[in-house]
Length: 250
Image (tube, rainbow, N blue to C red; front, top):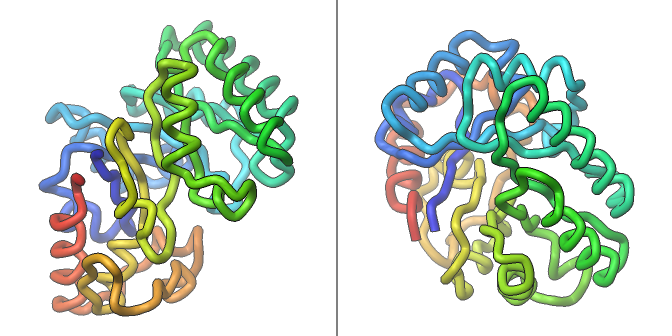
């Protein structure tokens, strides 16, 4: 499993410069020159770059901005929009189908990540199966709250989805206690998280299990403000680098 680490813009080069699997946010690609140049450099040197939409950060993104971000970065893979807040399965499939059609027509790109949603486990499973039929979907992203929502482990559900659809599985986020990374991750292609950089910039080097609670992005400004954080001390930057290098692949 490769891990894409999410870092404040000011520390992208120093924390992620030696990694080769990246996740970039579409809104930041369009609005932030320094951020965009870093991920363009990553693409130029041959890194695999996923481009995500900023749902977790509490931001909406329109089709025009998403298309602009794709044209600026030419990522390897793009996350399709979904019903993040409502977990509406039908709306998620509709949004994915519409976005796939627009992106393929306007850019020619045909490699997408889809996020299954559902209020019940059966709804979620059906949503995943329907998303697997959407043109260009190569990967399903399984979020960290699965066990909390449905009482089934993330690893178990991921195995089920991978077996039934034949698609790659990406872990969107990791649990605060890192238990999902200690579980069976054979067959899981990748994961993304800011947690290891956040721990580091708070002065903590972490293994498994982590010896300190996860302080959250709020400790560095907030979910969206995190990207503008630039007040780290040298030892904290070193701690973030340590965490990234320790946890870049499992």
